[in-house]
Image 1 (cartoon, helix red, strand yellow):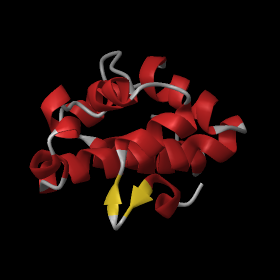
Image 2 (cartoon, helix red, strand yellow):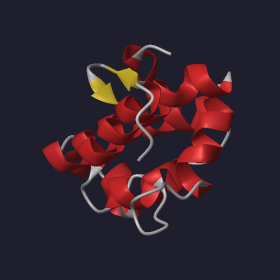
Image 3 (cartoon, helix red, strand yellow):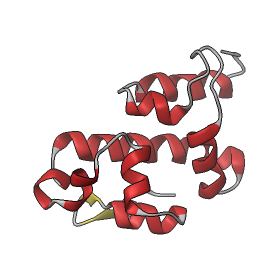
Image 4 (spheres, helix red, strand yellow):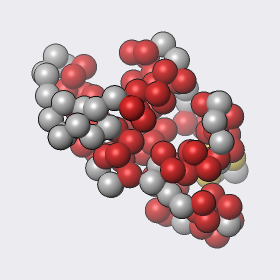
Amino acid sequence: MSLTQYADHGLFAPAKIADSLRTTSEEIARSAGLGRDAIQRKDRLRSAKTQRRLREMVEVINKVEPRFGSALIAYAWYRSEPLAGFAGQTAMQLVRDGRATDVLDYIDAVDAGIHA
């Protein structure tokens, strides 16, 4: 899916992401490592940290979606599948800890046939 599908007026919109993934905005915030305020207050929603976390989460889901055939299954993987080489942490846990680049690099390595 295109990143613009998840945006509204140039900003990632938790409600659009939630609709696409059939969940709530609050769950999207938790999945990205954000608090409830980050999605409810307009000034917080516009903040660089909030937008970066939402973008990182969407990028990871988009990157694995072709592998799983749907964004819903990719989101389930993001939330629940422990990644090899990361002490049993999921992609969601790593993104919440600010390690989205590590997750994206891991996916690239797996796609290239390098087993992490």
